[in-house]
Length: 442
Ligand SMILES: Cc1cc2nc3c(=O)[nH]c(=O)nc-3n(C[C@H](O)[C@H](O)[C@H](O)COP(=O)(O)OP(=O)(O)OC[C@H]3O[C@@H](n4cnc5c(N)ncnc54)[C@H](O)[C@@H]3O)c2cc1C
Picture 1 (cartoon, helix red, strand yellow):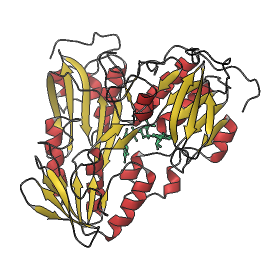
Picture 2 (cartoon, rainbow, N blue to C red):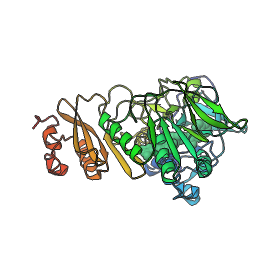
Picture 3 (cartoon, protein in one colour):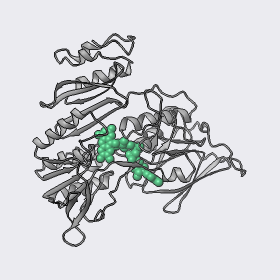
Picture 4 (tube, protein in one colour):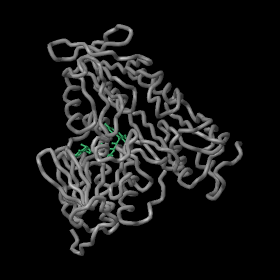
């Protein structure tokens, strides 16, 4: 760590009488995408105060997206998922404590204290919560049977990959990104795969109906069975303790020797709530990652934050891009620097050879334009509000995705009439920078 020690930026206010503040530095709870980014951004901003990154998993921070993609497909060793080498942490003066779960936090007298499951006490002057989200469990009979798995972390993925090797019949509960990525990996291994989705369409909260329909057809073409609007009421037991089937609302039982429940993730707000931070489906933060208590920041999947483009309302976004952007904003705020420029949200989900890329947030759209050939598995859906481009879902169309992302980043729109015409490359439809964002429809 550089030697020119400087005190941390704005810290905890003395909210209770007590001894003078001890500046033990910054504690970041949750050592993953957001936590590591926050630590790195603090160092990049010149912060040289002590920095402790604590994570409950036994591994140094690693990438989660490949867990349901390349790792499940057998293309990666778990060690290859790590973001950084051990030397990086030492060079940056980032103390990394793995295998330590923070169980309680207290703020008083301008300082904070954390306790861990192994009995450690950690002092801090500033706190960041980057604790992520946990898979939503199904509260149905048999949910605890052996062979009913979820996928959130590296250990989950190792277990799932091992079980997949021997499984014959795989049922995926939940037709969201993780469920469908897993379905694609299982079909690639020639497993009998059924996806059971409670809602009327796949990825229903995240993509346009045309994309849901195309993905249903595409997964079926690749041999998966897709059941929509179908409730799971429980899991049947075979050999004692082991799953043998999935019970459906209509009384049917789907035989299964492996079940993946991909029913979404819930923000981990327990620590924050006990600390008295405002939580609403996530730890409530502002655009600078500040929570409701001075001296405490939060970033990533655990937060509910203003819409990144409009600054309005509150959204909870689970994506790498969001974790990185929020952590960078929080680090700037901790250093008393202005927030970085707002970023266009983006996301990807690679389901075998189906490459979905999303730019922008589509909430609030009043029109969509489908561009390309949905049956040919190469198309985009562009979303508009009042004629202005909001977002796009791009399927095997990376060029469209790049143009939309660029347009949104520059505050430009693409006339809907031009967007629909596949004979015109989308980049040719981009107006010059500075053109108003709500042009008349062509
Ligand atoms: C299988 C999978 C595939 C994904 N694919 C994509 C994708 O294709 N594209 C994309 O953009 N995003 C994807 N995501 C989402 C992306 O990985 C997350 O948005 C990102 O990891 C969020 O980072 P985070 O640091 O906020 O939270 P997390 O990555 O969840 O990390 C939080 C960390 O905090 C730790 N923690 C929690 N509580 C405590 C405690 N009390 N004490 C100590 N440590 C604690 C947790 O163990 C965890 O390691 C995927 C996620 C998964 C699970």
